Length: 306
Ligand code: PLP
Ligand code: CA
Image 1: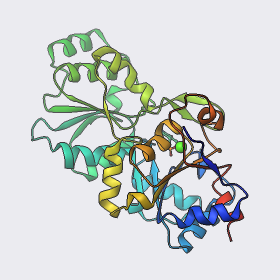
Image 2 (image 1 turned 90 degrees about the horizontal axis):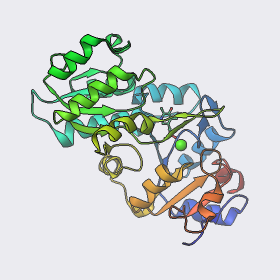
Image 3 (image 1 turned 90 degrees about the vertical axis):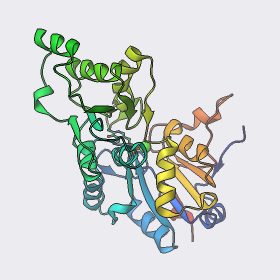
């Protein structure tokens, strides 16, 4: 497989690269910031791209936040944005459930394994749900729970979907409930399948690792709605009337971001080295996810371009 073009420090190549695209789909964590630390030169780089008439769309797999939460974060970091420019995996999942699955009532309730970002987006789409941040589920399982789960009396008969995202309060009771709903025919969805959650210090379990026990128990794979799912790409395309050939996906993670752009047949993919993936991964023999361009950091686009 061909290797990506390295753009850092090469003004002519950067100008040609920027001219090739009208839209930049920007992964957030690892590209713009790491946790709460904004990388140097990001505000100016986004301003620079916008000043050249480019549209930027923020595309994140972080399911713990809703789009309004994300906009608050962008504002706090000094990045102007419109909520409509933000695509997060919780939003993507909510839209998929309400506008694509369109489950008929009453069996249209969602059992949520996840945080408030998912709940906010489901509420905004008018999708009923149970579970999520319900404090009643943040406890040890009891003998009565085993009985109630086995005979179904502890389950909501209207649940037709199990949606798993990152849940900081995951426990045996929630996994047991999720499994019972799936056994009773609920559809299995995941916000995203990132194996790990990168932080400034080290890696922690990601949303994909929350789904693993359910996959192991049922032998089913969930339909995932974050990157690299093309359901998310289709939703972005629908909203912005994307010309895919003139759209570039920018990201730090090969198996989510770069794969998202490749599978979506975008005009290009740009990898940055400020996050999870290392260039040794695409340079390795037999590597099957290779970006078309890479830079050391996103702000290199502005630093060298004239
Ligand atoms: N999932 C969670 C819960 C996160 O906190 C993050 C990063 O903050 C991610 C996924 C990855 O987000 P992104 O797609 O912006 O890299
Ligand atoms: Ca990322």
